Amino acid sequence: MGVVQSKRQKYLFLAFCLLPTFIVFCLFTVYPMVGGVYYSFFDWSGTSSVMKFIGLDNYKRIFSDSVIPKAIFNDYFFVFVKVIGIMVLSLFFAVALTQLRIKEAPFYRIVFFFPNIMSVVVIGILWQFIYDPNIGLLNGLFRAIGLEAWARPWLGDMTWALPSIAIPAIWAGIGLFMLLLMGGISNIPKSLYEAADIDGASEWQQFWKITVPLIWPQIKTSILYIIITSLNGSFVLVQVMTAGGPGIATEVLGSYLYQRAFEDFKFGYGAAIGVVILVLSLATVLIFQFLLKKEKVEY
Amino acid sequence: MGLLRTFSAIAVRIPLLLWSVIVIFPLIWMFLGAFKTNAEIFVSPWSWPQNFNFNNFIEAWTEYNIGSSFLNTLFVTALGTLLCLVFSIPTAYALERLRFKGSDILLNIYLASMMLPSVLGWIPLFFLLLKMHMLDNLWALSLVYAVSHIPFTIFILVSFMGNVPRELEEAAAIDGMSPYGILLKIVTPLVKSGIITASILNAISFWNEYFMALILLQTDSKNTLGVAMDLLKISARYESAWGVLFAGLCISVIPVIIFYSIFQRHIVKGMTEGAIK
Image (cartoon, rainbow over all chains, first blue to last red; front, side, top):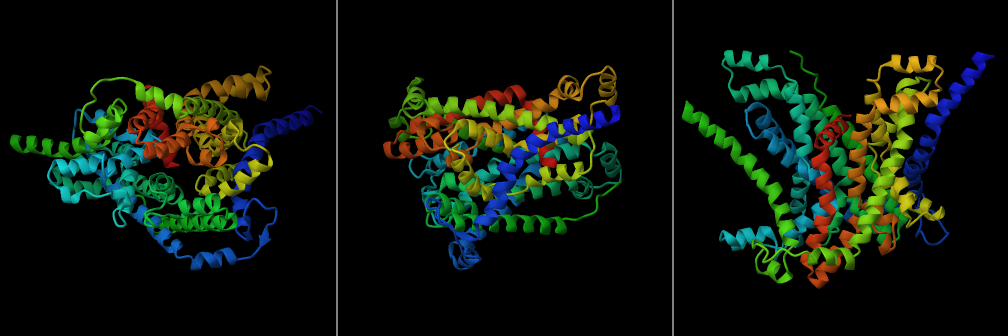
């Protein structure tokens, strides 16, 4: 009797711990995801009660929509530029701050991390100012050093708008990945470098033969993390800074989804774009996980 | 050799100093801009403000809804962070300590959901809240924020709970304490540092959140800082109220700066651990 009672109490306690959380999780996370896929098969303006099932028509429209290829290109442009920019800079800073005996290293660590805690809206508005044609810092700098010709309306320029958004994205991302890599480097036994010194290996060789292989797990994690967050989230900065403009020069899938769904009230079409984002980000992660599969090095 | 060493010490510092300037200078420029008049801002982006008065701050706070948005953001941040803990602590405990059939699967479901693009779910979420009459409601927004960070919080707490010695729970159970009591009075205090780490990061994300608030809130008086700043940016463009905009940016950032300087270590630890997954 006692056992039965305690077993029942155990299940009650389990249910108390798990059920409320799981219910709200299903309601506000799982249901919306599944619902997004479901809505993508409908033609729906949101306001009317009429939801017309149209099968794969939204997807057919996506294939013939000329904005979509540009948006996908831009999404991957951000992924590419962010992975290269963030990894090169944060790896350099991480090595410099851990291995080159710099006294004021904590200062750099604190400063470089700072943009990571700022909101995308603040970062976006701040950088809009930096790029402002009239009162901006960048054009002001060029004029001050006599490079008047380089001054331009950065975010209004068809070719320069996209890279101009990538720069604050890198600016805001360095600190986190630098710290991640610093954590990895500080776990490398000092004796390895001492042995390499005795063998006469240059610092450059030590970097490629010791540091990089031993922090490969952290490098891989960082790259995957940048890919996921970029494909799923870079549209916020785009929407704040240019809303996809000029024209469609900086449009990415996420901003296009927002504009179609919440500005043009084409919710079915927006949901289909969301499914494309889901498929692309999962596929990209899988491909990169396959490409970066390199055995962990043990010394 | 000595000369070479000095040279390389300087050479390494050049990129470090350059990047420090690139990070710090825009922020200093923003703070100074908040004290300038529009005329001063237009004359030169490099000038020092003539005198330090707080007119821009007062105008942003009272006439551009930054004051009410500040309070709304504070409310949503506090309630969201609290709710997230209420939902996450029991589940993290059950997943880490009360092994049951499917506990690994459930943990993996939570963790995998962090990889999905939340933008896909925003359309159904909008209509769900519409049907429940919960649009334009700061309580509902707090709940949505809390739920969106349940997986991350569980992830952090599970790793902290793994370090709590089982003997303490067993001793309390022998003394006749109920499992509810053990969870609340024994385990929760012991994972305090995990709770603090997760909560600080949650609070910063909620404070900074913009897009869900943009979609789920509708009236100006309900807006949070992200949305209000975006609106202020648009009206600043028409009215050339740049100083006010700078002041608004400062008001949005200063609480996070204070938070960061107090909890620097927790933030760094939690963020790097969170990214490792």
